[in-house]
Image (tube, rainbow, N blue to C red):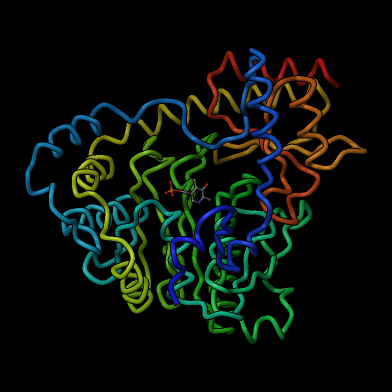
Length: 398
Ligand SMILES: *Cc1c(COP(=O)(O)O)cnc(C)c1O
């Protein structure tokens, strides 16, 4: 029955779906509120909380976009699965970068950023009441995407002792019986941990044994230091039998605002994934795909420059943390330093103290899942001088 206009008059409550109420509280809400209050008072707040590259997209990619946007063909609906040239570029990139052969036709799918992909994977593979194995701390959408789809999360423990390699082997049998999907992501956000080939092999074997679709989110595949070049899951034997891997232009090419990524892997899984997407979105703006082709197939020097810059910032932060007495392992990859909070603090209470007293925002580790408690994440996407000032301020509060 429709409501009459009079029924809508006065105070009206919008009835939202239960799935909204099921979402966890947004842990940055309090931080955002304090930040806005401080800024309203004219206080200079430095944010080390967000992982969003602060330097611009390389010129040659912007130039490709400027040209692509003038092509009228690009003004129409894009291909649902990604343009043929984009999928070919992604496939070629997989071969050039990792020596991995994926078919552009059946094993590659364009995404409107990997975040979109992660959220939609649940609709393709997880029915209400089924479990997804999720890293004990990780990209929040592994958890919230499941909730929105009516799924359940099993947090896989990540500890300093296990090198923050999510412990899938400890998953209880009753959970495994109802589990469909498992997420892993290395180099890892937020812990900066990196995986060994042996760990990937164990994960593939485990996914096979328990009939799980393994999703490897490789958002930081290009961000490595001290000569470290992150590996991919697809290069491990048997990966394509059970896995999909996500790659993104966001962190690699400073393209977070452009919304372009891709998935590769098991053809049947890619097909089901594409079926869900074709009923929800209409693909990536083709001009953006053209720009991403330039990113993937054009000169790769920008990655070296980016890594040099982040490595310098990493060293600066590590040295300062050492002086302050905050414990952290020097990251070999990603744009984050994962530091232990001092004794007597929780992630949230330490992040609050730093914001209240030093006017610096750091991300509480607990915002990324239960294994993140006891840590903070410091992002390296802030110019050197601001980063130095932020650390100096933190030092003065301790
Ligand atoms: C940044 C990030 C993403 C999101 O990437 P987009 O392609 O911009 O959506 C996904 N996963 C992890 C682990 C990230 O850190």
